[in-house]
Amino acid sequence: MRGKIVKRLKRWLHLGHRWLGIVTCLLFATWFVSGLVMMYVGFPSLTEVERRGGMPTLAWDLVRVAPSRALGLAGQSRYPQEFRLSMLADEPVYRIRGWDGGRRTVSAADGRSIDHVTSNVALDIARRHPLAVRPRFLAEVDRDQWSVTARYDAHRPFT
Image (cartoon, rainbow, N blue to C red; front, side):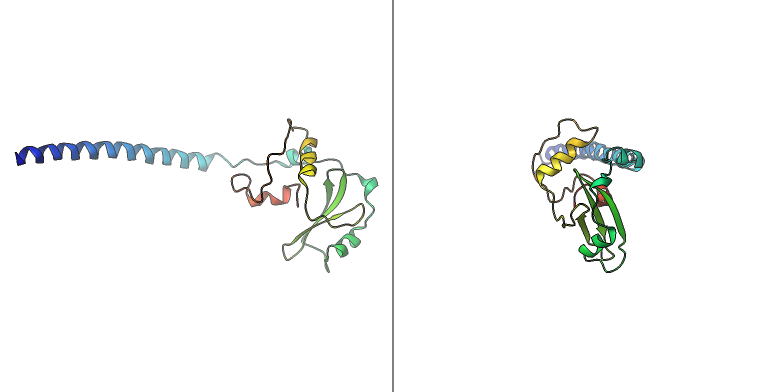
């Protein structure tokens, strides 16, 4: 009787070991293939042509604040690490990144500091993109860990 039980347990041990090996083999094969994909398929990127194609034309006639005044309004005592003039919806703005890493946006039209962008303005900006297809507001997100990495923060239209 005892020999029969031992024989049966060995059979189940062998079967369990075999199928556990097959399942884990499939798991590791999937892990390996996904690693190959991650190595050779690049992260989605934005070429300079694509980036510039989605940007609005600068409204030079609305620029009334000199760059030196904008730097003063942003609290910069020396030339910053990055200093750009771009559009925020219909308004030209100076985007300033200081040597301390802090970012400021100053209106080039009237010199006011722009600390945030409302959801309506963000939706308006999205609608202006030439490739936009019926954008809509879903929810506000502080930080989206699943989309673009921080490496692309400089290319985002929001400050």
